[in-house]
Length: 95
Image (cartoon, rainbow, N blue to C red; front, side, top):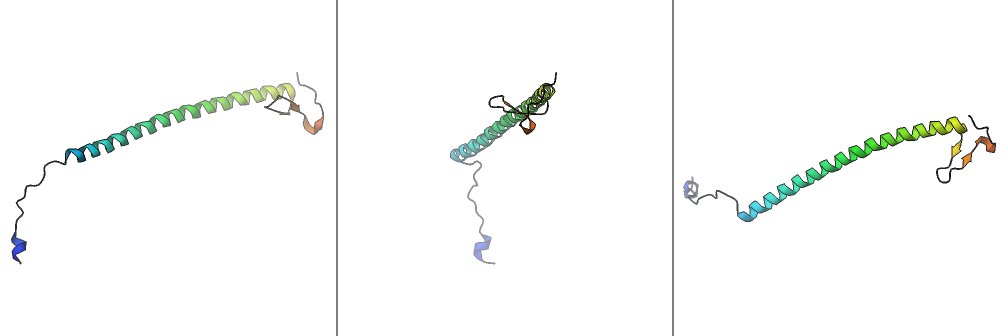
């Protein structure tokens, strides 16, 4: 053993981090919490929109079935409403 191995450090150890360090840590934690809350808000909004899409798809299916009952199996342009009958023949409308 050397003399240096027997030296005891009597310098007091800090009890707290500096105010500047504390402020940096608090800001980082606050920013993380705010970002997590924002993600939660966006996920909730996403869930609501996905539910809305499902309801709109059901509505579209009902409309398609109604049109099929009235016009038969045809292609209808969603841009101008024109009907394209199979093989370019005018099919009789179903009543």
